[in-house]
Amino acid sequence: MKIVLLQTGKTTDKNISVIADLYTSRIGKYYPFETITLQDVKNTKNMPVDEQKIKEGRKIIQNLGGDDLVILLDEKGREFTTLELASWFEKQFMTARKRIVFIIGGPWGFSDEVYRRADLKISLSRMTFPHQLVRLLFLEQIYRVFTVIKGEPYHHE
Image (cartoon, rainbow, N blue to C red):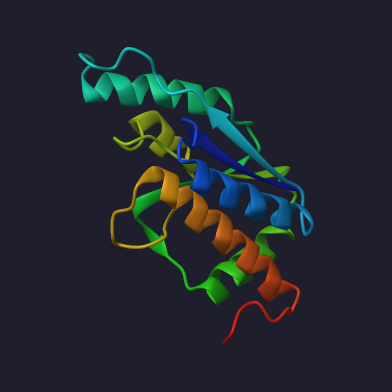
């Protein structure tokens, strides 16, 4: 099984990008991990929000396999503690899926098509964060989950 982070738009803040790369490298030492970055939808200045979400949604769907376990990072999703998330991961590792795909959408959220394709929605917090920071927070949590699974002292609980 492989873990994939599918995200829309590049990380433009160099500082966030450097730290995100660090966590990506750390995660890769524990488990096969890949980040896929989709290009932002172009010419959106006068485009209605629903149309932007539909176009972005099509790009997302094109990058999913029929057997993927699809998890949306969504403000209305289920909240986990780190230990609960680690336990959830361990259960997923026992399934026959080829990939777990976590998706961070654009600023307007997901299209209806993407919501229908999702197997689960999770929330990092009920607070709102910029998408670039969500990437970093999520990568750190994935790294932390693996340290919990491996019994390493990174997580103090």
